[in-house]
Length: 151
Image 1 (tube, rainbow, N blue to C red):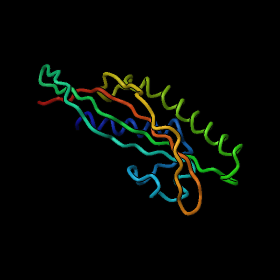
Image 2 (cartoon, rainbow, N blue to C red; image 1 turned 135 degrees about the horizontal axis):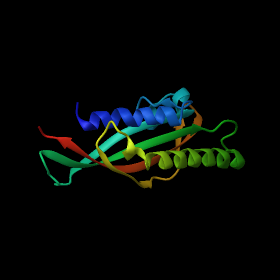
Image 3 (cartoon, rainbow, N blue to C red; image 1 turned 60 degrees about the vertical axis):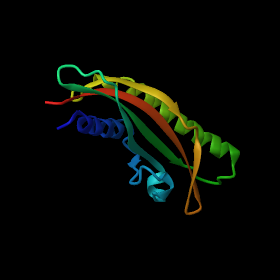
Image 4 (cartoon, rainbow, N blue to C red; image 1 turned 90 degrees about the vertical axis):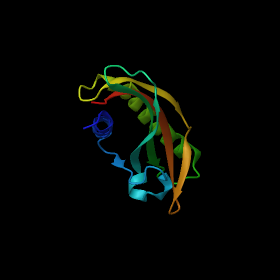
């Protein structure tokens, strides 16, 4: 099995441990296409573009890959209430901080050949409208470096 498959499994395993009450969003590319139950408190993983970093050594390919983890929260009550919106924005930001803290140590996992995991940026808190309910999301972007064996 390739390292990216192991890394993929490790990411989902870590997220289910970090956020046991969150649900996995079934559509990781079009977040608003998920149903309200999933958007209420969910997450999605998107393994993005990869770059060959050309550090070929001992028949190993060095890869840098973008990973986006989207966290969602549904605003309960009136979504026109500024105090409610602020409350849920803070919950989402705390979720992100928990994610960043844990993922900064993800390269310690023994099952994958990760060299580095770095939080790079986020896209800011965004609104997601679905069936007249308001949810918010925060996409956190990471870069991961790993080696794949070519033998």
